[in-house]
Image 1 (cartoon, rainbow, N blue to C red):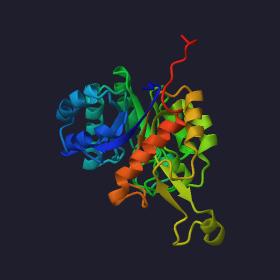
Image 2 (cartoon, helix red, strand yellow; image 1 turned 90 degrees about the vertical axis):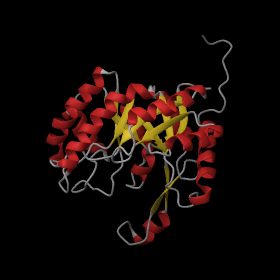
Image 3 (spheres, rainbow, N blue to C red; image 1 turned 90 degrees about the horizontal axis):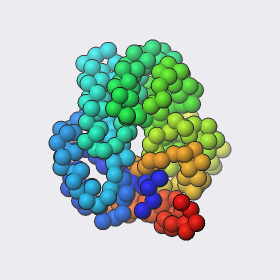
Length: 297
């Protein structure tokens, strides 16, 4: 098995997690990203005890453990989010991963720059806490329907925001959980962005998009007609061989974990059909089966 870039999938950290993993192990996923959603629905320490022996027995690694909540609000939910991120950092070693991922959070309905002071206040100690444990923090680039001027969950959806974030918290262990889909639906070409920011990409969500250029040409992006939709890799517009090549050029090592349950064509009864196809496609784009070089050390 190749060990520089692993191909896996996202799994929900719920009471059904162990059973779900047992069912998908035979399909060939090399890594799993465990996402607890917006809050812990199960005890994360106990979940690790249940699933890690099974994963080790099948040589499956954990690409990241994740929470997607808003730790920047000055209310009970923000306080809970901050405490749960700290707990996630503290239990990462149980999953034998060095990536903790999620949303940055956002001061609700304010422009991105107005969230930066709170971002610095909250994330500096959390990132330092992670650094002391040799962990990295990776923020997903999902807008969550937000824009530059307003939103409710996450500021890490735009390169200009990344510049503000990394300047506000100048630590080497903070970066991105990047997926091209979230950029494509903003009509951003993911490849130049990838080349520029690859050193800050710690974890990759395997999700693509299809852009309907004819709809944009005819109706623009403000009409009620959808001009883009999310896809499983292998069904969208991206050439993942190019993406993986650029990740390798940038010395990325880690996981590409498919974020399923978004493809409206390969969903429902076809969900796992699509995910397994996406996994096989990504392995093909990675170069196929690893072949040792007889003249390389």
